[in-house]
Image (cartoon, rainbow, N blue to C red; front, side, top):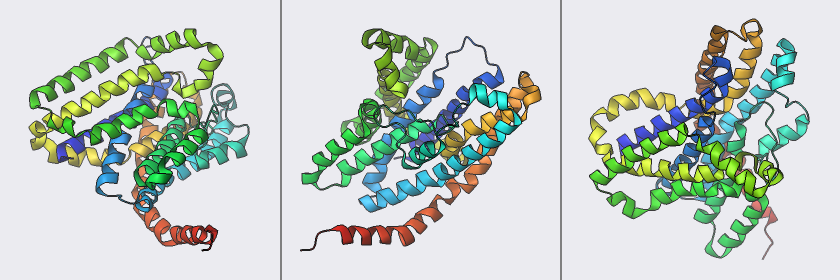
Length: 369
């Protein structure tokens, strides 16, 4: 992966996280009601393709064993997920005291607390046809999908050949059809990284792919194809099956968008050398922001709710809504220093303290010869 292409992916990752935040802040900043609401979900599609690409790259170049892979994944995920769960619970309880009416109307996720907590800690919120919100943290759903894809990928990449397909089948049966429905989007990123012919794309083809896919993605957003294709699907399969799909309801449009995202990556990779001169300055600007992407994604929803409740007297003013959004962004950037900035320490702790115990337990459970 060239430096410029890496920086560009970091830039897209940050912009996608910001798009998700702004899509949820939309009612708070009084953006025109005529704008489509789907750009936050569309950003998640970009995340999935990007995640598949990066995970495939890491597995090829750095994490060559299942142990390395999962130590890094657990450190990466739990360094943010655990604080996010704790912060969400705390802010929900405090915000409910500040503005009970707002939380009763817009944040009705305080029932079945132990179940929500257990599901969030184990990333089982979305298996089969469950749809268990992590309290007020709606974006948490995609992390549950992501962890399922990590599990499937790790089996395919690291499991012994004779056990690979039985394990993949058993895991697929565990996570269910809803998550599997979006798996091709994540897998597309893996295929893009491993498709060797794609690296031979000529520069002219790269410009066509990059610019053409950009224009088509703008058209996708402008015509709001998420809702159009979802409505078509709903009319074909019925209301109840459609509702059970929950976050996978838009899978038809998601497949189309994922293809455009992959073409965008493919195109820029072929022309990235043309921007090499700005890679250094851009890296110094983008990398610190990209390092806060995961925190922005997982912290913003409960923070938005809390600041909306805190500014109860200004809830219907443009200034109040804008202030809640800005406070959320600043809070996420500050929290990133104490979460994502500590994932290296957590990985070393897991490797030194937890992993040896897991190894001893596994050895004890193995039948003696």
